[in-house]
Image (cartoon, rainbow, N blue to C red):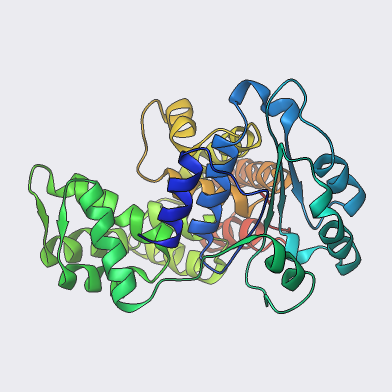
Length: 338
């Protein structure tokens, strides 16, 4: 069983760490582990007063410790989550680390980071006394086995060759790979096996220059890729008014996702609330929503509406519209937040 599987099994049985440092460069597993804690530690009806989520770049140790050291209010447990803990000022990190042992037994503390050196302080001190979970990008056979397990969970068989091709075409981001496997599962229908030809057809098509790939690039804030896709779409005759409309709709959905995440809703429930059913791309929507702040999302919608007016009145040439759509939205220097 994978490290994430062991963690999920333990949390599912109600065995929660007093303090947990979760970090690594595989955002998918880091995010899933945190979401799992938020789902299981505190009952939904008690989250408004027994769950605190902080952004390490926007908070202080005093605010975090006030949560960590407080007893639950009308409930059994309290959960304090500090995202981007690795990006806090060191003095605040050291202050928090020095008081972790003082937290009530009823409390659970989750410190979240990206790539960090566990031998640096205060991580070394935290790791010596509390649980740490490291989720880095899977590689080689380990990644292929994970993909085959994911396919089996959907009732499908994914051969090693198909798994390798999938990685070659998609990259090693687990979130992207899971999304592709979900699409492949729907594509093959009643067939039990996902063949190499299926991967070539579906993933190859999804990687072409279309509005969905443009949305993905914009969601990832990949300006160069978004410009490339937009330019190719214009070359093949796509109308900029349509592209603008679809992007506006996309950002309105991202804003809804962002608000639902702030209410601690899980991805499945968010998909149902926004799309009326499960959406196999919901993990991409969640990742994109986390890549933008709420003010940035609102600004993007404003930019798109402005571009829409100028396109319809002749105020923009096609190339100028693309520059605004891509550069204005993805190129803003906003902090990534959840």
